[in-house]
Length: 363
Image (cartoon, rainbow, N blue to C red; front, side, top):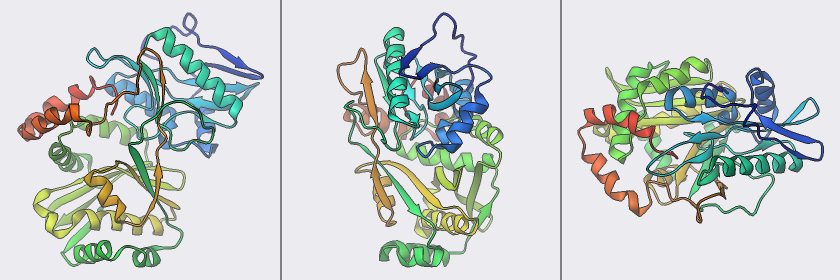
């Protein structure tokens, strides 16, 4: 986790002690101990890795303010916070920005509470509106407010592709079979350039600003072997693509899309089923279909795959705000800009989108 954003650790140190636990700001040289803890913790995710925060800072200007808890010389918890400044929406501390998961990753309640206390003190000192924790799970529940908005979908892959296919709902299984007869080809090792064009068109249709292509290139360079790009071709045309993240025995198809002109061939069904088959062959244990907002098209699509559905317990420590922030594109106040974005020429969205994302505090 980088600290190149001008943070004076000595002058602005955040220290909290709860019993034998001491919390301090992450400092250069602690990357190995931080990531060793993350890789061993059952509550950790890909987005807790120190390199994620480094890339978010470098590419999008989010200032890392990570906290690390120790009992003696042993790391017992980490909290990958980033400071997000926005003149339009106000400042906040987020764990983790541009990620669907984050929050406190701790071995025990004592470490968890010490990290939370330190984050609250930091938020008060920085004068932010709130501290956002995008928890994947909640092993140590709190009474902090949240939003009943997001769920995540996961599939245990241990049964193997044949049984998993049999377990799909009839309509989904039919769509997979139909796509397999449409002359589609699964492509491994697709380049970021081809992926980006498809992804950018997909988010344009949703009315969402697109990241720069450099964002994806930076992820792939920083996480060799943990970021892989796959695609679907029909003839010589790449019609769908997915950018996957790998963490321990889990595969997470994190960014993806398909060309609307080929929807009749069910390319998304073909793509995600092919990825499930490949993940089984490669020995991965879990397929994480990722976060979706309730009531959206993405939610409906994922719900048809007979996966385990779990609420995402996002939590907020309110500092200057009096209520939980409403920053989702499904909120009514964003409907007009979303519709306006859909009407922009596609070529413009690739120019305007990347700098615009830098000004949005929570994605």
